Image (cartoon, rainbow, N blue to C red; front, top):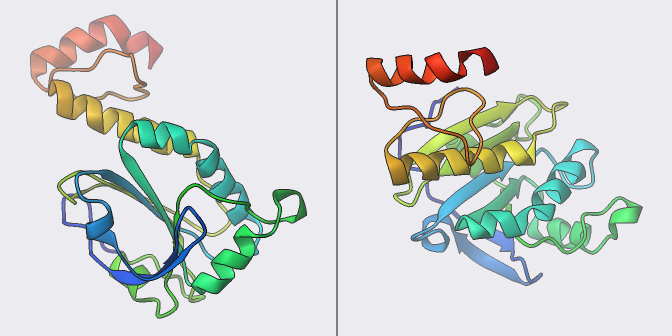
Length: 200
């Protein structure tokens, strides 16, 4: 599997359903995330089982992502028409409702291949890519099909990235917004561990 961390996010243009429910035939990644961070996440299929729980969990936190200037984009190999149909099914009937972010159609599987998340079954693994404002991938998390992701952890990673960008410090294990960071020096490590090692 390719490691994209530290590399420019592969661009693409594909059909998509936007947050307002409209369809666009040529949604282009880098054009739509200009001057923004991006959570680009893949999921296997519409109208399945773990997937709606993930999409809804991310939607419940969409305001928090927007506060961090994060554009959220979901992708599967389904058509944009299937995405729209799934959005139109109420949550209590197994649908996802009116999500507040874009769903991209990867019917040709070219995006899943570019991000190297296509499974042997032909659907995408549960890949999540954190992209910074320079379009560089800063984190990638790939889960197997049965393993749902934690939307709060994805938010936490953006907090950590933005903390590092703002203060230049690194984020130790278990770091959350409001916690102290660490100077990336031998002295910084020693000072941090002296105070916090027992809590790790």
